[in-house]
Length: 570
Ligand SMILES: Cc1cc2nc3c(=O)[nH]c(=O)nc-3n(C[C@H](O)[C@H](O)[C@H](O)COP(=O)(O)OP(=O)(O)OC[C@H]3O[C@@H](n4cnc5c(N)ncnc54)[C@H](O)[C@@H]3O)c2cc1C
Image 1 (cartoon, rainbow, N blue to C red):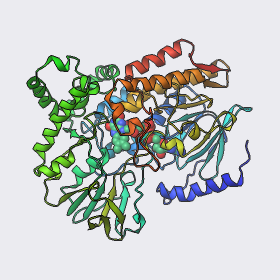
Image 2 (cartoon, protein in one colour):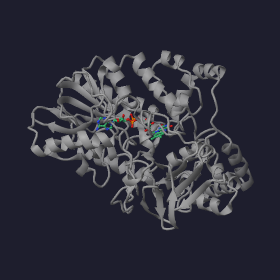
Image 3 (cartoon, rainbow, N blue to C red):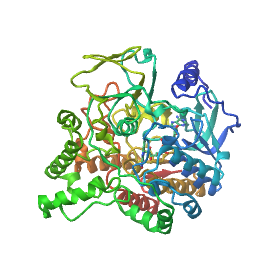
Image 4 (cartoon, helix red, strand yellow):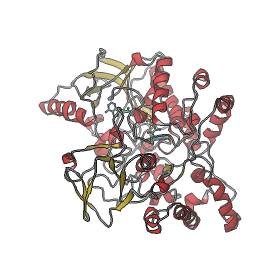
């Protein structure tokens, strides 16, 4: 086992104090369970991915433990408690599909279920399958170093504990590290202020409050629609508008849920054949085979349909053909103009630098209508940038806006953020952070050359990242579980992706961007995260696999059937 250097100890101490505070853990009860010092498999993260893997591996009788940094399970749904946080996947397509009894027992209350219900669901899963005994909370992994001679990983936690693992499975999430605001004076503000990811568990009173929301991405759009009717005044600070479309959410009655239960097999089968694993598939009839009037009639229907229909059940050409996309974007712009009374505000809410669907489309409920309320104000940061946060509010170049509460909906250090916070070192001490400095390189979004016995569920460049996550997580998770039992079954103790296989997959991922207008987007799919220091936006990062979930799954199957092509085992 490597000796901890003084520097490592200090950095671990800092993690356990400053970072724990940053993560909001200082008030939580320290972990009580005794943690062993060597496991066959250690899973990191108790979101959908980690929970699926702990179930699969314990079912296989493998000695496994799951370490979670937070004080509870659910990952995305343990955090993100802000008003309006909910699925954009149909709830009944998001739940786990592996257990008939679970499917029969759970009643999704809404078509797009809100965060509290989602969190209850994951706790229910843990209780039903008795997974808690395998999970240790308040365990932030800070270091993971591969020990070639011993063929295991040495792991260190933020509180100084250490352990070993023959295999490590990362389930640390692609949207699990918030991007904090970097304005001068953020800490000086006397009222409440928090990032949406850190919205407190205890009720936050909004009535009679002067509220500021910074950011109009997917999260900001959810929050604004939800809180606008409640607050005394609302200032929305917008840097870049995003395209958004109505969620058209509704309750699911008992009878509807019975019907869904009876059709679960059919529903999941359908999802498995669609590019994103959603209950929507693209219309292949051909954009140009219809007149403009016919297209508009079709879009009028889609606009009133629930969820991602407007994006994913649209003509395929809106993803690939710039002219088709421009016509459709113009249609959506018309919808925004019709919903927002003040034409100047409507224009500011219409994106001019990208087309509809180049990024994952935020789904909204009463977002545009919020701007018709006399006390909701749009602050265009291109015209009047924020100069600082003061004790009493946000100051822009136009003066001080007095506020009682500031909500930072400033998004995530997406995809690689959670990896970058951990000191992961592979063969020869090579750092993953350095290897991925210009963007991730993986084999199948699951393995990394030079990092043996390290697997990622819902990793960068996997299909999960672009899809209805749990659908791809179950398939990717099964593949990982099968691979580990295969390696163990053959008496091997080391598995690694070859450099060639990794290069080929990474090139394939990049190539898949070429056909899609998404390559021009400036969201997290292209690794463009302008919230982060130092991002020039000049080079896109190939963060997600967009060849479609069916193709991805077929590739996983074929790799396994060809004796794990692209992997070396010894
Ligand atoms: C607001 C919001 C809404 C979303 N809605 C949808 C949706 O409707 N449909 C959809 O498909 N996807 C949605 N997503 C994407 C969502 O992230 C995935 O659906 C899914 O929850 C990802 O699960 P995961 O297990 O991969 O990661 P996460 O849920 O992010 O879980 C990762 C876990 O790892 C833990 N962790 C991270 N680093 C460490 C460390 N160093 N040590 C220990 N533990 C660590 C985290 O604390 C966390 O609990 C949404 C995301 C957000 C933010």
